[in-house]
Image (cartoon, rainbow over all chains, first blue to last red; front, side, top):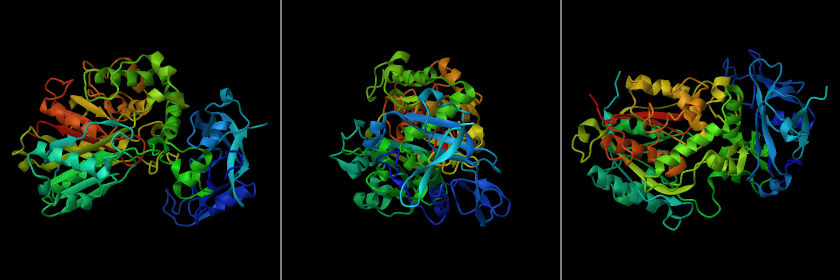
Length: 142
Length: 398
């Protein structure tokens, strides 16, 4: 369960996604990379959409990206979230990947009016259960 | 190559009166479907016992249950297509058409039913999966933990991107709902018949910015069924057949699990209904284009997605859906009238079935807001989930 989002479940890793979530648990962002052609992809899956290779590895990513799209949820599904007021879910496009990699996430430490498409963001982590964390983003500090 | 064009036809449709959420809960799903199939078969001039095929999408009632319930003589064909909600609804008609045209079955029924029992809400489809458990697996492990739990929230992401790229406005969203309400004024079966203004739309509750309550369709209790048979058998039908000129499903590159937690489509497809591939396919199969259509039934679960469907099906160039709507082009006197029955936003939300009903009525010449001489009708499946779908019905098979 996310520490910042009460009432929501955490991710339950599977054989394909485990490395992603446990890396986040260690404070690291990793992206799946095809061992054959080097194309990055997310969410994790078992075959390269580009070259069809079944071989893949985790590639550390510096965690910089930009906001691609977002919504502010004003009427949450989970009652416990109502106490937070409006919250955002945001699609972040990662910088410097081989092929498009967009991650559904959340931008923290931001006022509503400041969240715009194209905003540069950096990753940090929201603990979400034993050994796993959710990659989340905040406006870049530099 | 076998050409399927106009080799099958819709010869009957039936439904129970549309209800508000939970209104038909006491009847239950089976009763609602049975009533709808009975009515559809009566309209087609056959007995439910003559139905020897079922083609389904996203249904809680399986074909064997219906076959048993009606005491069907023999079951010869069953099929199911994928895609959440009514995304692939036209695919059920594609499968039905292939079956009757090739002699796999004589009469195939497509049905769809829903009753919202207490506590079961459309919008909570994915949220419910994540409630009361510490962790969620499968595709939703990448979205539900972040609080993305409902279709409206997912479509808001596409809507926001569309606004960013093309300058689409919430006033233009409002125009979609205003049009639907205007069409429903004359329709006694429609649930929302009161016209609204842009101000009314903007005063409705923000649900998932930029989408407000009046950008969402309604929850409806319903049961609907349609009978499909071969063009040859359709000659004996009591009413004018609606021939299936083309029906198909599809998705463009990297749109496989679109909008759930997969957001890697090319930009022009992310901010879209995901229907670029299937629209090209149905026009190709029918040998027709948008200019050949007389009226269109566009699945309107969310206003923003209607605007994107118009673009993907060629009503207007990409990015110009907002101005197209704002200029009044959806109306009865526009270049291509859309949803003269009021659609999902004003008549009822039936995961696409009531759009098919209206398409058949227009071809028969029995619609309330009848388009004079309507012959070719475009039917657009639900935007967003994958595969989505499209269909062209015609009253002129020559």
